[in-house]
Length: 434
Image (cartoon, rainbow, N blue to C red):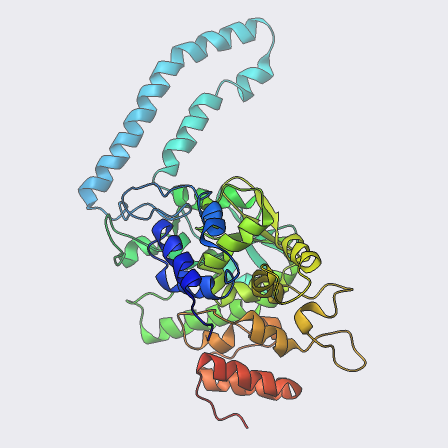
């Protein structure tokens, strides 16, 4: 455990003034990643965070609106009536103008414009109004095909789905920040009928627009959900499909052009400094979750989005590699936090002291996993093993327990058992691996 000093305490307290809901993270980061930083230096970074907008429900940059879609049938009917009333009124207003324009264009022989241009205002209005009550949800038939073909089930800006082997990006996020359902003033359950509709389109656009991609793979859309009201058989069938998606993640992440990180704290940063990005990233939830390690480890490229800029994770790590010359450097612990997330580049064989096996240029896989998964949490216990399977190129079997998953890893990677045991010890996992 790191030693807490008065300076570390002052840094943690300073961070909590900006973000009161990250007490534990602020203490840990102040004692490790920012242990060589002064409060004044940390304040210079925190001052560049855009304040949260105070509003009903989630105040995360890509979070959903509060659960206003879960209304009575009378409210829903009123919304639809309002939508069609607006559409009808504007259409009637535009109609005389469009008729006059059509006559003018016809007299001047511009028939193409009559067909292609005149309907645009009405079509755009129709699209905008229908988005208010639209949802994005993957067809179950495509979910099954994506598993059978081991292809990425991707979505475009219009909410249309397609199976792809290339030419797409992966969204990497924290579910509680991006998808967490909320009521007007707190977290709250959402009725299954609403969840079954999928992701509200107005919410979908919040994160899709930030990813700068034509096609996007989103876990909550590509993976079917188990609902409480399902029968035991139905739940088992959906769980089998979910495992099928998980077993295809190695290919999904490897083939993607990029993985895009949307961390809520980082999305509020206005800075062009790679060091500032590393500091805020270390304080966010995203780097403290287990699955993002898997996504970034397998990615061709990892993109970090801020409030007004885009950063490449490999470029940030390389900057630290070229800047940090010993463990006493003030950036060393930031470097140590980020470096295990990415494959060791060619020519960087002593990356953080990782040693290659005799006769090879590859570092021990579990040495990377052990360091890369430090201070990373998961909500589902078996994910402590299951999240490693895509990295290791293994397949999970439906119905396995955490212990069975760990034994499968131990059998497949017998030479790396030492670090698997260290991994289990660090995470407090009870096991009987010999």
